[in-house]
Length: 447
Image (cartoon, rainbow, N blue to C red; front, side):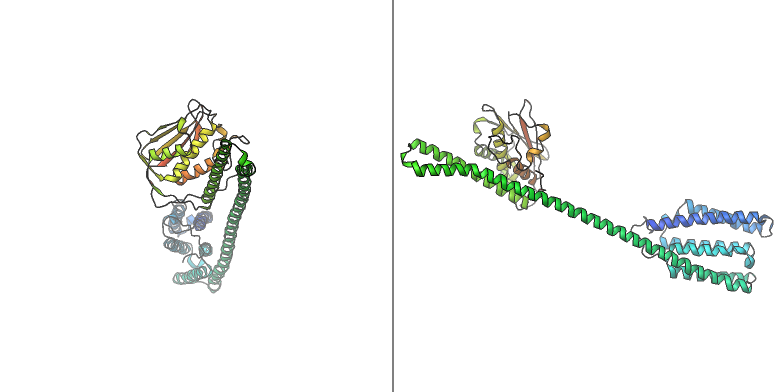
């Protein structure tokens, strides 16, 4: 006789939900209270002097031990639910029947204990189960009392009927209580689901708002960064078109070199913007393979035009596992950043070390360093330490660097270098697994 609509959360062995465990504890407390009340009533009514006293006292002692055991030992937590409930119902019925026989049989007023047993059944089961239990108790009571001398006509008509009425009434009330409880639990569950959905929607709205702000700033910064090189190139073209024939060849060459520098700057900016777009769309794929470390660093040094003041220490490390083009971009960005913030006569130091799991890169300059409270901020989009300075840059280089390093499964940080300056440190796993991993899509950055 399993209770319908029980919770999915069950005891380890008992198969009872938390609500059903609370019900069994309540029934155990009621059983203890009933035994105490019956003992007090029986002893105060002269039961000790009755002929049936010894048998009644034995049954009363057994009932007391049984009630204490069920309350303290909590057998319902270690026995299967249906088996436990059937055994408990049978034990209660046997004790009540023996007590009625020991205290007067058909004339015993303790037959009302059957009603309490029916209430305990209703607390555990549905209406039909409670009604059938009441019918079984009524039949058992009539049969046993008939053997013990027979019930009076009035008792035969009223007591079984009262058991059936009690079974139906308390069963219906218990079902209504459980239905209300199930409805409350359902409403709580719905409320929690709606709350979670609302929180997710609010988070999505906040993220979309951040993305919108980031895109607006993205366009503004891009327009500002495009303006300077385009103005220079257009100025050179206009000058050559208007005065080209009258200019000295050396001046023309100088103008063309300046236009070329600005065109290269423009190309780098376009590449930065495309890289950021691929990263944020999750479309940037990595071609990870063993790469010659010395050649990779040399290419980055050449691309950053820092060969005259870079000191490289590879410490005997021959190769790393990475996407060569992306990692050249990472080292180039760090060298560019170090060059921009280093004094004219300063040096840049590139050091590579390894342990059992990672290859570690360090790029150290002799510049002013990075304030401690801004060391996380420098890796955000469009962030520059020298806001409004004449140092070129879009504020995307370190953001791209962080994304590419993290896409390889590594990490990057900046700290104060010994002797002053900034030291950027990043790691790469010594072995990459999987084919063509994608760079993770970063969350929207607050700017």
